[in-house]
Every structure is written in structure tokens, then in C-alpha cells.
Amino acid sequence: MAEIHTIVTGDEPAVAGDRNTIGGWPLLAADEPWPACFCGKPMVFFFQLDVPQFDGDHLLVFQCPVHDDAAFGPSQLPARYWDEAVDPYEGPFWRLLFRSSGTAARAPDPYVEPHRLALQPAKEKVDEHGRGRPGFKLGGVPSWAQSPEHYRCACGTDMVFLGQVPENFGFDMWPMRDKQGDQMQLFLGNELYILACPARCHPEAAWPVLQN
Ligand SMILES: [Zn+2]
Ligand SMILES: [Zn+2]
Image (cartoon, rainbow, N blue to C red; front, top):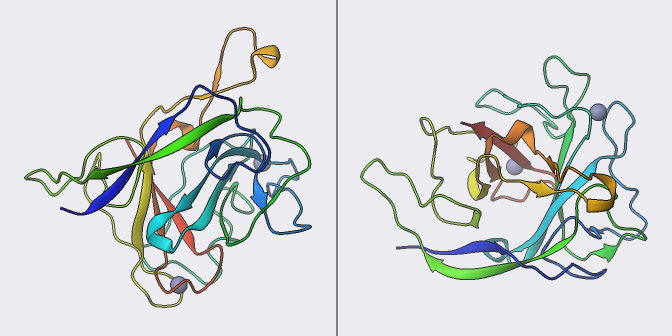
């Protein structure tokens, strides 16, 4: 069975320069502005990870604090799908970015309480329906909540599974901002399967598949 990495949330807070975090300081390209939604709002920075199966390339996941929704696309993804409008909106409300060398942003994300993430080597377990193990992980096989979905990148390459975030995974908000201990949701709390183009045709050639 394939080697995968399960992702574990640590208790210790993340600090600037950490590479595997929930919230905290995104490692963007030098002088890269903080990603903004089509509506103009700065996006929430949810998490970042070095991706072992992509030579340690760095994945960052953002979403608008207002436009928290599910997204669906055609199995043949259109040109520049990472910038394309997503019905009923004027543009995408999330960003899935790959950045090979990162520079810590000047300030941390203001919404999500920053935590370190740990990648732990594990073996994939695929059940009789072809579903991989559930949970927050990188590599292996999706644990599809519904039927498997397949997508082709605009460049003509079949997208591959990069990793997943489980359904209703809570991203804790800063306690001082939210006395109720609310949590931010990503894509309405749907299970998120991140697909990416193995040809690496563009540093944003990744697509979110959502199921529940
Ligand atoms: Zn927005
Ligand atoms: Zn591609």
C-alpha cells in the first residue's frame, strides 16, 4: 500500500516561518500581496503544507470570509480555471496556491488561531469500494463520501489526488475575537479533496472537489 502522510494538529502555536500550519503566517512568494476574493475582501488563510509527493512544494489554502460556499466545475476544467468565475459568482472565492520558496507574510491571519501541523508517515488502507482512509491527509486515495470524481486540467493532463480535509473540520478562531469559540468553515464544511495537475503547468493548477 502507498505511503501517505496523516496530518495532526499540534497544541503549540505556529510562529512566523513555520511551513506546516493552520492559520498563522502564509509563506507566499516574495512581495506577493495577500490573496483577495473577487469581492475585494482579504481571504482567510486556512492552512499550508509542504507536499512530499510534489517534491516538497508548498501548498497554501485561502477562502473568502464572506463567500463560504461549495464549488462545482466541469470534468474538463476550462483555461485558467483558478481565475474563472464560478456560478453564481464573478470569480473564485478561494485560492489553492503552490509556492516553491516562501517568505512569511508580515502579519498572521486575523481569523484563525495559528497551530503547527505535523505530517506523520502512514500506510494507505483502501476498502472494498476503492476508498482510502478518512481524515486529514496527504497522498493516497480519496475517502470519497460519494462517487469518485475525475477532472482533467486545462493543459490536458488528468488531475491527481493531493490530499483531503475531512468534513466539518473546525478551524478555531482566535479566542479574543470570538468568545463563543466559533470555528471557521472551509467550503461550508464539505469534505475537501484537493486535486492538482501532475504536469505542474501553473502554480495554481489545483481544484477543490467537495462532497458530503
Ligand atoms: Zn468574497
Ligand atoms: Zn495542467
